[in-house]
Length: 88
Length: 392
Image 1 (cartoon, rainbow over the protein chains, first blue to last red):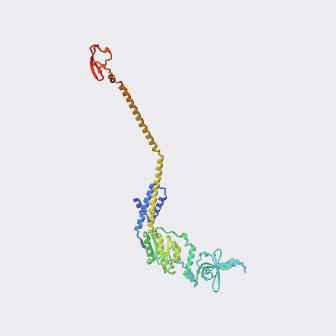
Image 2: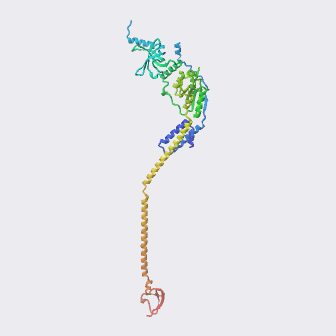
Image 3: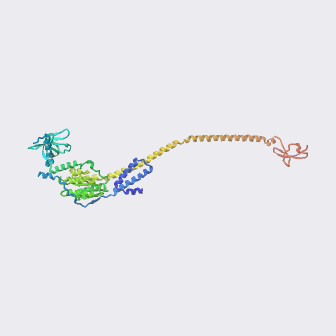
């Protein structure tokens, strides 16, 4: 059980959640030996526990980047100024 | 002097018209009359004002975005040419707007049409959003309600993530450049999985930055999927069309970009339950299998009952035989005993006979040769012995 706990801790929430879904599916559909079935069950429970605890302990982080002025886009695809020029 | 054919003249006229810069891309205002829709869906009408008129044809009526009927005052965009076959001068229209629309509106419609034709709005190109983004980029003003709303909603729904704000001007001079720079900054990172470009409501002028062609192309060129959340519900900007996804408000964008943890917890419960059920099913399946096997096993063994029956019968026969044998022996014993008894010398003695014995040796006397006169003899009778002397 400890191995599964460690393995789960390495994963991102997304990976853990996806793997949990896959585990349930495998357990529902698979042609499994009894050992494999028990294994999958334990893995699945660990993954579910991991996901829950990540949700419980999470705090939103916010980071602000330094505003940069883009040097490269001096570009001039003028937005339709031709019309007014032509009209005038 | 040269004599030309009609087709040659018409072709020359067409080429002359088409080579004129002003006529190739022109806006004309007028009133619609003689409006007809052909079976193929093309629109034919005349654009007229007080002094003159012009024949028009609009081929892509599917893209029509204003009501076209006789009497409507419109501004139409297209090119002037000559239809060689009929020699008719025609205005080939590709856009019609009601007269009241301002210049900005016209520009918007024209740019939208052009970019659409270029394929920037293709639904196939729109990328799916990540399910559980670990980092969400936001391009918006660092002050103001937008970033606040977004972080509130994300914080409530899915705090497992990080919001990376790339600050930008969202209106006025320099806004397009600023937005483009912010998009570039986020795209340069390898950890941002989705971007929200947001700005609050405003007038067409205030939202204009997001109708800028360069901004549209920057959004189109973003490696990272972009959600456009500009203005209010009913405002549509070019950015909305070109982005991978459009949200009516910044809060709606935040709801689109992350799942709600309440729902997630429920789903985790379901998954846990499914896990348990599936595992139990696996065990049940095996238990049933085992039961079937043991049933088969039992049925395959010979039944014990008849054997026990036979055993019972046997033991009873044996008992009977033993009893018989015992009886037989007893009877034989009795008859032998009787025989023995009848042969007993004691009986003979009881009948009056006596046993004559030589006293010293106890040997029985059975012949007169064994005795002489004056010999003492022992006489045994049934109840004792006495001595006698031989007298004759």
